[in-house]
Length: 96
Image 1 (tube, one colour):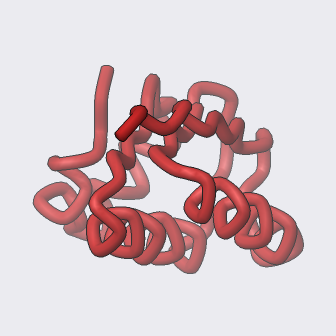
Image 2 (cartoon, one colour):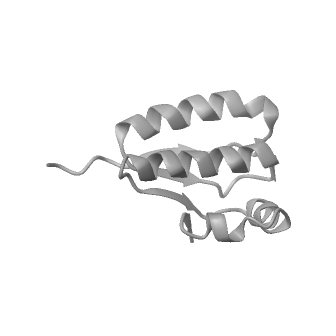
């Protein structure tokens, strides 16, 4: 069986409630196609709901036996993860 091509999803500068629907739809499409790589280097502000959505997407990918990673997470993303005590939950998916 051929490996699926990695689906790349770039998060916007502001990942808040207004952005979640579009990001969710993009993630769902990507998750149906194969492994997913989230580029989070441009994020300046991220909501708690967005972080939980990313964890949900990671769990969905795991159930489908697809890789899921968040690459180059910005300082804002890392700070939000730490502030909420989600470091252990994100540890398996945070890369670089």
